[in-house]
Amino acid sequence: MIFTHDTEHALGIMVDLVNSAEGGREGLPDLTALRSFVAASRMSGVPSLREEDLAQVRRLRAAFREVFLAPDPAAAVPLVNTLLGAVRVTPHLTDHDGYDWHVHFFAPGSRVGEHLAVECGMALAYVLAAGELDRLSACAADGCDRVLVDLSRNRCRRFCDSRTCGNRAHVAAYRARRRTG
Image (cartoon, rainbow, N blue to C red; front, side, top):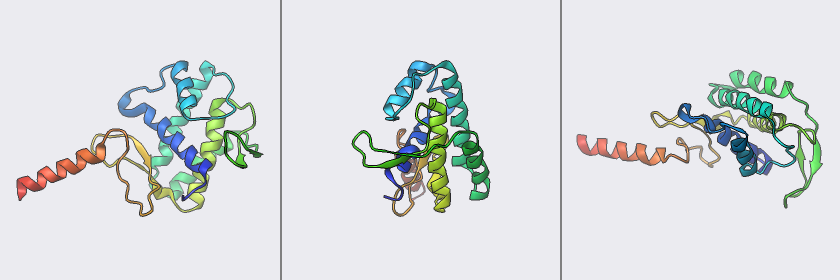
């Protein structure tokens, strides 16, 4: 494990959130979809959702994408600082859902957007502070606009998970070699 459970969990939530707008398709079209996203993400302490929550989450999604696509820490740091500077950070220890004591940074009862901004913003801060920005990237497959977090030991991950981009790229490379060989 490179990062703590909470940091890896927040990074995974960000990937899912950013990828919910893949290829111009809106993966969070309404509150029902946002409720499903919150439940699937196992986010704790989120009060009942409102329309303004949906708009705020969509704005955060765009801000998170900017960080994933940042070319270097000098470009990413101001983005993360802006995210964190816009929300209340209220660190507190908690043990829930079978996890030992860990720190939550969002204020109890925070709206889902603030919850995401704080938890995911702190995860991004940890990634940057550890000098690991290169673990955040866009899928290398042509035509794919998804993002990914590379938690592999040797930092070799180049393709997203869900669309079998890696398999398609490898098959295309194989076929190209066969044609020229």
